[in-house]
Structures are given as C-alpha cells and as structure tokens.
Amino acid sequence: GAVVSQHPSWVICKSGTSVKIECRSLDFQATTMFWYRQFPKQSLMLMATSNEGSKATYEQGVEKDKFLINHASLTLSTLTVTSAHPEDSSFYICSALGPGGVIAFFGQGTRLTVV
Amino acid sequence: AQTVTQSQPEMSVQEAETVTLSCTYDTSESDYYLFWYKQPPSRQMILVIRQEAYKQQNATENRFSVNFQKAAKSFSLKISDSQLGDAAMYFCAYRSARGTYKYIFGTGTRLKVLA
Image 1 (cartoon, rainbow over the protein chains, first blue to last red):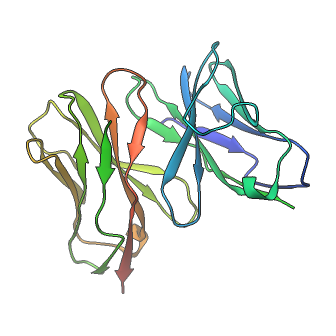
Image 2 (cartoon, chains in turn green, orange):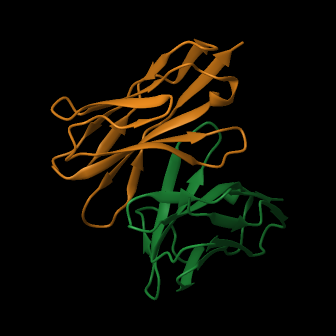
C-alpha cells in the first residue's frame, strides 16, 4: 500500500519558538494532504486541507497564522506551529489521498510538547 | 453537514469470538465512501475496510466485514475470530465522492480483546 512518512515522531520545544512537522508521501504523488490534531482519547480534528501549489484551506476556528501549512511539492507538506505555547501541545497527524484519490493514508503522527 | 456517530465508546470481545462495532451517519448526498480505520497503541491510523455507497454488496477483508444499510444510514463493522492484535481504537469515517474530499470521523470505539 501507499506509504506516508511523518517526521519527527515527537518533539519538545520551548514556549515562543516555532516547530516544523513534515509529511511525505514516499511512493506516490499526493495532490491533497490533510492535517489533524488529536487530543487524548478523542477523535481526529481536521485542521486544514492542503493542495499542492495552492493555499491551504483551514477549518473554522483554526488560526492560519499560527499553523502554517505549505504543500510545495507533490510529495511533501509541512505544518509549522509558530510561537508555540503549552496549549499547542498535542498529537498532530497528517494524511494524504492515495492513488485514485479515494483512500487516505496516514503518517505515524507527531507528539508535540511545548514547555 | 454530514455527521458520523459511534455510540459505543468501548467494547470487549473474547479472543476468537465475533464482535460488531456500530456506526451511523447522516448525509443528504447519494454518492460517498465509508471507511473503518484502526488506531492501535502506536497511534498510526490503518485502513481496515472501505465501502462505496453505490455498491449494494457489503465489503469484506479477511476477518473484517461490514453491514452497509444505505437507507438506514448504518455502517457496522464485524470482526470475526478476534485476535489480540485487533485491540485498538476503531474510527468510522465518511467521505463525499465530490467536493473537498474531507474525511469526517466518528468519536471512535475502543475495542478490548480478552485472552
């Protein structure tokens, strides 16, 4: 099956700094990728949809200036959490629509801790 | 707007037995996809099974099968011959066949497999 790799798996950063999370489709081209946030024991909350070469579409309530998404190539999307604060600590997951554009394949997720 | 409901926060099954996880959804669309994803303790989301709404035949994948009732907007997952490795969170998801291709997830069901 199609493989999506997310990096890093976990990161600790200081409050006020920025952190970048990468999402790569390893063996297919992904024109559409999604970024989710998952709180403990809860479902996935869609943050934004990114399409290669265009601006990301953010869900209501998600601060686009805080969560910067770049989908510069068909195999890479990045999420940058700017000026991170402890309340941004969470598990972030990316997914990419696979070949055929129906099934979403997920990365391993990134646990972000802001101290 | 579409919604997905999983009314069972937690289920238990004895090893080798069969368990059914429930999912209902609400939509006004006629063309869509439904999925079951598994999230084990590693938190990597894994596709279990998918169903196209236009197909009357229920999807099956080895020990996993669905009962798709389009009129009732019901999409349950049956796991036969349960194994310890089946223990995970299971999420039901809906995706329109048109538009933004966003996935809408239910709140999840935690499945425990008892040895």
